[in-house]
Length: 483
Image (tube, rainbow, N blue to C red; front, side):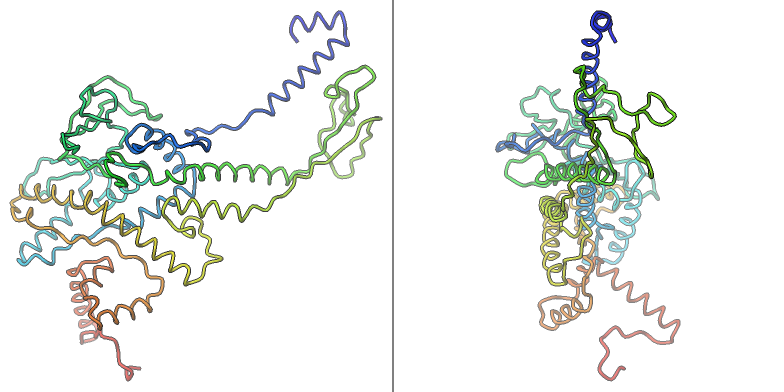
């Protein structure tokens, strides 16, 4: 109670009590009006898009990245969608095949040295080449883009190919500190709008994403950089997150499910409210005295117990709160389905709900999903990532004396898609072989292995079978008499 309240209470106790009642009610309203806040940046309300024709040119990408990263960390649906895309696009890693190299010694050397290099490809020494590709692809899907920098390290005889790859977050691109007219968002372009160099900030990156320090940006030639992103329209020089179409729905669904959780907690509680009429003094019911608990004078009864007998004063009444239960299963599944469509995955993949799916419908949806993964592989990952890495690898291999490496292009084989019905797929493969619509090499590559690996595996199996049984196994389909 402040000085004014004490003075009024001394002159007019009734007026003082009214002020106390009003202040108590105000404090209750302030407590009830508080809302839970979130640590990440909010996606925002549904309104007109702030993006024009240059929607992927950097003006709003930082806000989109922050929102996408927050949802990726905190939303199970968003994180699962990104995992599904990365797992199918990269999986356990792509294979580099050299079976088309005619000279056996060169083919064996390429296979051996490439396998050795894959284990030490990470500039920071944390991941293999396959792990780097998975991380880079997933970061590209979440952030919209990722930077990969080539490093040529010192080499001595016996070492693997002296090429290392460093993954850099797109936030390290210097924006706003370069005054050149042909530098946009940290990327320098020539007169034909082709990247010439990238400018990276040297400041330290804090946990909140801000940069500290005042060192000038570092210029790195474009030949040493892979700027990995999906090109969706003409004259697009920056990438956009895969969650852009679904961010609002993901955010709204997370808030909706949190509200449902609060509703369920309230529904599990038995709440009772005591109402009172204004007393003869005109005081507010908020400060009208209630019945004291037995043995505790001055303390109000605040909970119900079995066998409790409570006496109400004239004018008082008790009302129970029974929250209305709303069936929302259909709404949630519809929102998850829309999120899956926006992220480019299947509803069953991010929800784990296979209750209403039959074999035919799942195969139909899976076929379209595989086609979209093939597009991502062939139009983005192959030309921007794997072909660029091999070009730099071959140049670095020439340092070791492998002068023929730059003239060789490997056959890249992504991991195979898991078969839903192996028997049906095997019969279809045999029919295609008999009809001449497919070759054995094509079918082998579809399994996610190279021809050399397949032949080596068969030879090893034959040797093992011969050592154990005294004869080579037959891989042909057995006839009717082989029962």
